[in-house]
Every structure is written in C-alpha cells, then in structure tokens.
Length: 418
Image 1 (cartoon, rainbow, N blue to C red):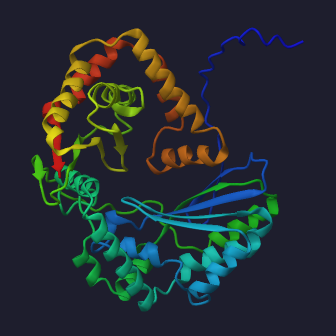
Image 2 (cartoon, one colour):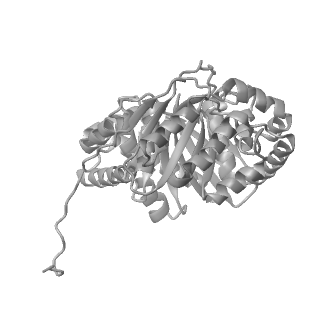
Image 3 (cartoon, rainbow, N blue to C red):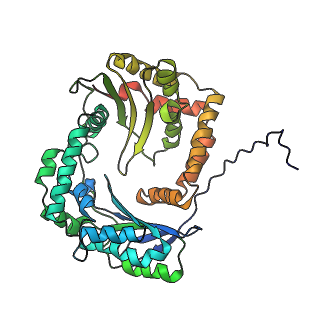
C-alpha cells in the first residue's frame, strides 16, 4: 500500500545521451538526418539552404526571398498553397537567418504524399510575384517604423552594429532604403544562384517505402555541401547613449564578441553566464530586480553563430536609474571575477542548467535541434555529452579562472537608448 505520509526518495539523474539519427546520404551531396523513434503519426521535415544574410548580394535579399517563397510558384498560386496546407492540417515555417535559411513542413504521416510535393514546388519553382513583393515590403516598412519607436529594438540593433560593424552580416540591419531597392529580379537571381540545399532534418515514424519516396523527391534539388565563404571586416564601435525617443524608460544593452562553441572555455563560460544572468535565480536578477527593484527583468545570454558569437546583458529601467543599474551590473561581474563562488550556489546553477539541457532533448522534435546544431556547425558528435560532463564536474576555482579571462567589465560595449 502506498505510504502517503512520507516523501518519495530523491533521485538525481544526471545522465545525458543524445539520440543518434539514421543518416541517409543522397546522390546530390546532401544528407537526411532522421529520428524515427516517435509514437505519434506526425512529422517534421526541415530543409537547410545556404542562401542567407551571410552571402546575399545586397541587404534584404535573403529576408524577402524567404517571405515570398510560399507566395506563388509556376504550378500553384499563393492561395492554392495556403488552402492545400490548411486542408491537410499542415504548417509551413520559413526562417531567414544570418548563416542559413530554414524551410520546415509539419504534418500528419497520412498526408505526406499530398503535401510534400508542394514543399518541393516552393523550393524549386517560386516565382516571387511583384504584387506580393510590394505587399511584403509595405508590411515590413510599417513594422519597422513601429519597432524603431521601441527602445529595446533600437538598443539590440545598436549593440550588433557596434560589435561587428554596419557592413558585416551580424552587425547590419535591414532598413527602409534597402527594402525600397529590392525587385523581383533580385530575388529570382539569388534564388537560382544561391538557394542551394545543404542538409535535411527529419522527425517521423515512416515505412521504408515512404522514406525512399522522400529521397527521390529531394535528390533532384540542387545542393551545395560547402559554399565559398565571403569574408567581412569587423569594425567595433564605442559605447552609445541616445535619447531619440524621450521616454520615461531606458533600455540597457552590454555586450562583447565572445568565444564560440569550439573553444575549450565554452562550457565554463556557459555556466558562468548562467550564474550571472541566465535564469531567474541568477545574481543579476537577485540584485537588480529583487533587492534594488530597478527592473522587472534582466538577463545575460551567450548567442553563438556559425562564424562568431556574442554575449548580451539586457534590461529595461527608468531613465533616472540608468547609472545605478549599470554600476550594479558591473559590480556583479566584478564579484563573479574576484570572489570564489560557494559550492552551494554553484550546485544550484549546475542543477538548473543541466536539468534544462535534459529537457531540451526530452522529445525527438527538440533532440533534432541539437543534432542540427552539431551538423551545421561541424561539432564533435558528442558535443552535448561532453558539454554536460564538463559542467557537471566543474569546480569553483575553474569558474573563477574563466570569468577572469572572459568577463572583464572593461571589455563590454555599453548601449543605452531612452
């Protein structure tokens, strides 16, 4: 009989194992990474293309190419595409990025043969109609005008600009003047020259004949395993304070270019960042939100990209509290550098970080994201297992050494927009 007056014994499971996908090599040079251990009759297939902000010939080309990809082909109108996907309960997601463009299709297994050819049609036969481009440019410009009145939007944009420079893909921003110059011919040219398939990531329980059919559909698509990388000069700027909006609230952004996933100090930097501002129990939250009451929320995050990485600390505070907030942020960083953390605080941060990492691979749809990160960034197949083990065994002394090397306040660019 169950004894309800006693709490169950505590068990701490710190095992971590990323499921290994089946890898199918295609004749066009691309690969399918397939996770098939899923009980539900649903699937997600994501195709990664090399066309992106990094290799676009002019600002905004990759952005509008992605927006118009499903707005009409030689075989289907935009409305027909939308109606067909809706009829089968399917969902299409297209995300332009700094390094790659992602096209994902979600659907029911029984609808695979009905909807997958539509996806193939989009990525091979899109026509980029002029009227659709005009509509998307109008929408973009209106949204941009709204966003340019938000301190958080401007501060984030200024931080990237000051870390990388206005002509670098990671530092530049798409503005009205750029959008105005884009014509359908620009999109068609980039589509033909650079919209080349890299790899495919599939989650779904399929029969062998269904997978064979998917392979035959994809193998006809032009692929490019490795592309020639453009090179860009990085032009770092100085601290920026603006008062363009004359509001009562200011947005703070502090940041720096940071070490990337393949650096030996990356695992220790992740846990250092987590302690500083990576979760609700972080030092920045306790000091600046709970004790000082200067903000509703503050965070610190590491944002790795394919060819670089940057650290961001962000918060919104009242205009008259900017100086004290900046002082307290830097005080917390100094404390992390110069004072050895207690075993208890480190254990709490480790448990939260590692538990979150375990949740991120709790189902095939989230696990495939980790597999995608490993593949696209050419990381070791055991990257996450090694990361997990490194953080699990980390000591206070190692943490202090990492913060002394990589978290100096003097290395941070400061942006204030009010």
